Length: 243
Image (cartoon, rainbow, N blue to C red; front, side, top):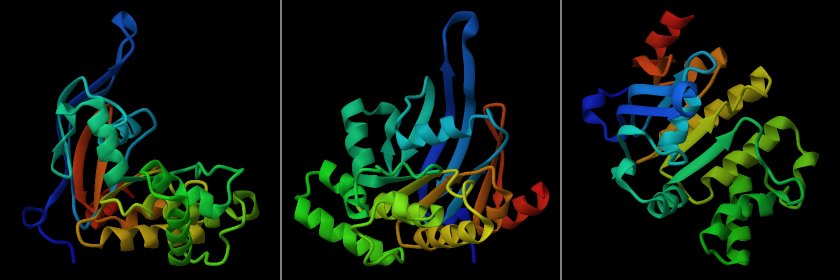
């Protein structure tokens, strides 16, 4: 059962967020005073046509883009007021990323790929690889640690990407089109895993998608158009209204 938003902790709060690209007459606004909330314990979808600002909003929440104006609070931290170095540390410690094209390093084994976030955080190689091997078990790929990405199916590679995103135990998981390159059954498995992750205490999952097959997994769906969030509804209500 979905709880009333007033009883949940806010994971992400976006207020009046604006972001433009280019200069002078060539300047375009990707976000126009956007308003958006995401809550702990939820799997939140962001939907809308290409070019509506979804990826820009996701990049703002991830701390990889700086807003021109507005306020952005993520896990209690005001990202719009933080230095670049502070945002980098915050992102490394609190946010995990899953991408459409997996972004695995082809010359590294699965264990080595998953170890990367831990190594960047200063974990010793042996401990990082031990933790990475345990993560492979969690996503159903135990014993495959010495394999390379090319030896896996698309769905298996996405599971490795999930393991890499979760290896440092992030509180916020950000996913950009995680199922669009997958068949229906594999996409269903991946979304089931993401929904399970969102249910863990103090966790939140945000997914940008064009894939209507995944609407059923959402607790809330935000619909964007022309740089603005038009509406945010509970998942079932939005799925019925959209479909």
